[in-house]
Figure 1 (cartoon, protein in one colour):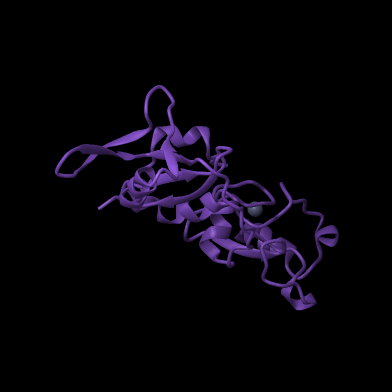
Figure 2: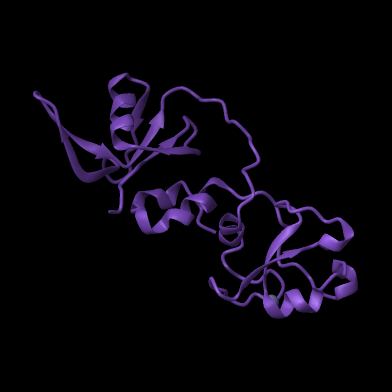
Length: 176
Ligand SMILES: [Zn+2]
């Protein structure tokens, strides 16, 4: 079953993480966070009952005090790489799926190119073949954008099937 999660924002409205609605309510009760107001409170049509009150599950909440941002390079996974590149060949721009997608090493493996976010891009089979074990300049191909480590939401998309997207999140998360 698809789950409805709460988007936790830092005090400056930048996204921090997704948490369960129960954890979100807990943050509210402890005065650590508040529900974000857009056209109204950003909540789900799901409620939680306590003996004295009924609470709506928060969709978007914001910490009252800044939490330190922890910059970590996320672990390399194929799926997140393809999500980062929007499932498009980074050379010719063609749309790809599970069967047609490949990973291209910008500095070829044969030349010691590592399997890292900066050195790997999504490619179609044709461009991957064309590039082969040549460098970017030798191949005559150009990259559509500079590869870098993916953002948090590239990982979230991996679980898209079990994930209900709340329309309010568009204001805080860029889905590129
Ligand atoms: Zn291509």
